[in-house]
Image (cartoon, rainbow, N blue to C red; front, side):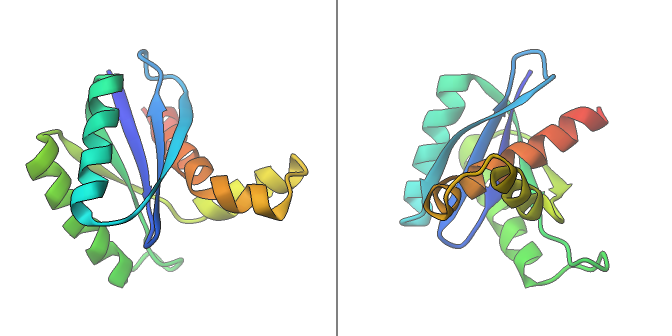
Length: 135
């Protein structure tokens, strides 16, 4: 079963997919957000190409475990995905995923410009890999 992992941001969506056996997550792209319809069309293409059976959305809880305004935005986006893609949706606590992605890229000695381009994709990998490791 292939799973699509998403890190939803205001300007971009980081995208990762699991391998067919569900052991590892690979970052595949960062979608530059233009409109909701554009975002959904891009996700449809990816789901078709990779034969996705489930969508995992990073859920941005506050550090104290409460839900803030970003959680509501993610839930609304999840409803649109569910309607448009007809796939099961699951949320995954994404606290510190972006921090971990930045740390990994710093350790790899990537320039600031390169880090900025791929941070959301790497965060999506951390989100999806965390979920895969838990199951």
